[in-house]
Image (tube, one colour):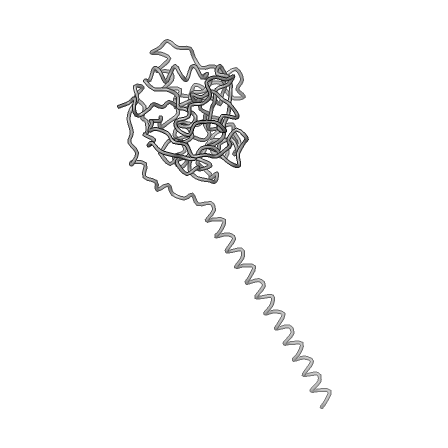
Length: 298
């Protein structure tokens, strides 16, 4: 009898142990499934683009002599430069600018051809380009292969001028020092830069990335084509520049261009990034847009 009860006890203990192990296994599986579900939802959330609900209608617009729309950038202070960027981007400072207008879009091949026809002007030229040169002649692509002087001549013909470097940066990043025109993170479908993930191997039609507009509603201030500005380049300029309407040094070897291009890395499409080139440089990454002072337009 005693042996029978012992056997029953052993079997009962074994059954309880098996049941306990099954409960533990079930709980572990339940936890794993829950974690997978959470990860799947998190991944799905990351893949959803945040809608652009900004109201750009609040900004005054005008039309230049070339028939192209321009946006008013209000007078006031903005944060220029970067404390974490390159040496020539430092120090990060607040700068005051008078109100000015900026082209809503980069100057396109079609726009530039109208100027060429009216002024009997030379064609853009790109000595080295890894793709089909026919791409460079696509009407709604930004014009590239133009020198600083070419860009200046177009803007004069259109009753405008090149933006100063400070004006370009304010139009690109707004008053709060954004790293990119749309915010502080690189997000999909907001910029045409290195690689084909954005849908374009080289340039893209101007205005193809509405989600990448700056806070003022200006298109393609990052990527697509880099843009000539008025200033001569000096890597030390920010250290001694005036805080009101800075226009760069009187003269140096190179002119400034900004914005990064279709061939740029993430670090090079930042709104504070500065580039320099000789005024006569022409290649497949360099284009431009124009601006004009509000005072001169009144």
